[in-house]
Length: 239
Image 1 (cartoon, one colour):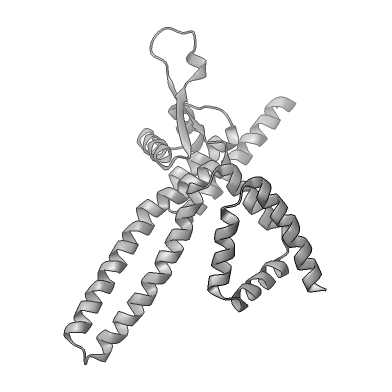
Image 2 (image 1 turned 90 degrees about the vertical axis):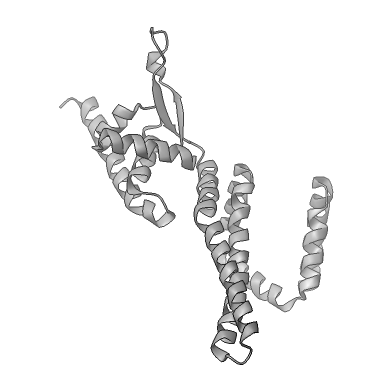
């Protein structure tokens, strides 16, 4: 086998192995293995491919490939584009598919889609059951079992709402904002983050919320000045 052909075969083998592993992982974030395999293969190819090229590479049937590509498009992780090799030819332009190359962009879309498909419905169910338990407990005030269920559901709904809200904020961030935030977080040692959480636990809620609200209203120039001033004050106080 010529050196170029051997390298190409090696690259394709790596892509297919990646697609298989990504497909197995796909169920963990709520998509079918076929959708995840299609996304991973298109990401690794980094070029538009037709449905036929995708299904032949991954060994899918025409129906399975078409469904996977359509669903991946719905999730916002694959885009439909004009088939570039049809440019200049007669007849209608062909259709090809291209993986969304901005990882932070498609990650936000997956989070948003999962919230719609999974988070919102379960929150609605929990709220309905919490209301049902509260009404039943009111009708039977001496029933300890109903009272315990009412109290547990009330606290659990609060927890799920908080988690759902946190998840819902991710897709509302611009991809570059999300990328920078997580990169900055990655540069902070774990011990520093844990100490910060310990410190927050010792402060009054109103003081923390007031500081966050005040910071959010600063202009970029004022925020830079405030950051430098606060860093100096904190270092002085910590001595």
